[in-house]
Image (cartoon, rainbow, N blue to C red):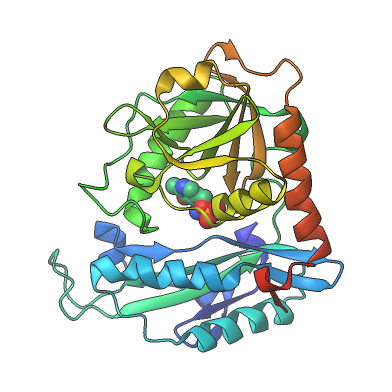
Length: 304
Ligand code: PMP
């Protein structure tokens, strides 16, 4: 849990957990003007290693761009801070949360001279969607909330304010007895989960919504596309998926840094897999866990 750790990196310094505070008039608190990442460090056979750290850094800086937010720490400084944070707390297998947000200068919507505050925290974390989810799959509900369109807000920037939509969708699903939501875009096609991308398997081929479907281009999504293609699968990663296709899919699964590769066994009242997890999902899941457990694909790891 994020509350069980003792050190957080904040604006260039390592501070005690209870001192890592921010002003109540911070711009980011009022207007959702923060950008962040969720990254996993795996305790691989080659030692603790951060999965696709460089790609997460790329996305963090890209997310800041539409908000003209100037993260004044270099990639090297953020990397060094993160590795030291893990080292100081003896964290091997954990979740890493870098965040940059507009702090306080004044409270107009225009951030003006608000500083960009930056923090990094890391804490031990297990599976995201529950212990048996990886094997037996989860039940997902198509949310009544649509995702914001990328014509309304840059959906490919991982921005704090966007997650009120994720909260509404996820909580609605859980209130109705489902583990997670599937969120449609403004056009009514499948976008993604509240914090996951989605893949569909049909006739032995993979389909995942393209970037123009108002999704976040997940780094696990990219990893799964690479691994699936290496396994010989055809992956259609630039398509629209209609709501109805969910119900007739052979297999469905979520991907995400938190969710990893999680099978979806049921959508609304339609059972997709009596057996919980389909054979293609299982093969891709195994390929993914092989990589993160072995740490053997060096270009994907930053060793602690
Ligand atoms: N979509 C959304 C909305 C997310 O929050 C996440 C989690 N960052 C993802 C997709 C999956 O992205 P990644 O694989 O990079 O974690």
